[in-house]
Image 1 (cartoon, rainbow, N blue to C red):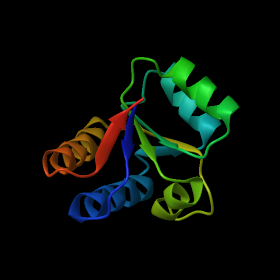
Image 2: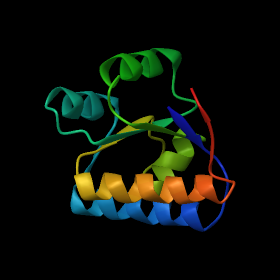
Image 3: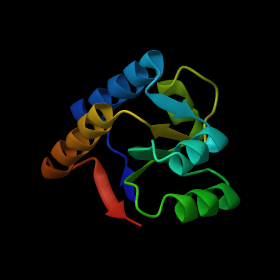
Image 4: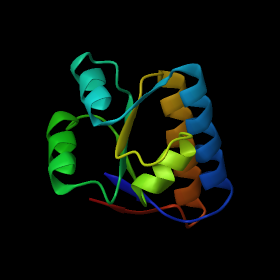
Length: 119
């Protein structure tokens, strides 16, 4: 699991990509929808809020063992990116969108910011 933190161009890119994915229907919002997309083998990338409940995180870690997972600071932040209140998890079901988000994370990591740890 990678944790994304810093502000900057890469974070803005990810924010825009997540918003675009929601509007296009390429993102499933919520824990149940995320787990369902994992079971249907549609999930390309999982985005989880760091402050999601321990039970939620355990469920997602168990279900998404082989799926790239990105942690964001809070449910409120993820919800804001998706145009909602608070969201614990979201799954990206479009391969191109997932690749774009992962590419932005890699650029942030190479620039010395963005991705700070694997957990």
